[in-house]
Length: 99
Image (cartoon, rainbow, N blue to C red):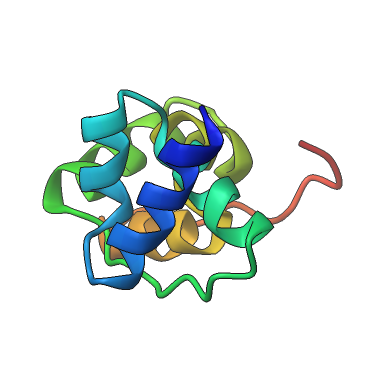
């Protein structure tokens, strides 16, 4: 992404647009937008998971993926993913010691 596009992302996020909307408009992963913001010391506020993300997170986790893998797949923070999985009614497995 160009420096100009990065500056636009930062300005629009600072004005209140969500990372999800920006990712869609710039045709990049949400994690890319988050990386741009963090690299530029922009405070990133937590965004709740959508109902669709909660259902998908629970399904993927029950299928055997780790919290980290589910978070990567859905382009969200691992802690956000853990909260979403618990919200979906799924019991979180004990840590395995690796990814």
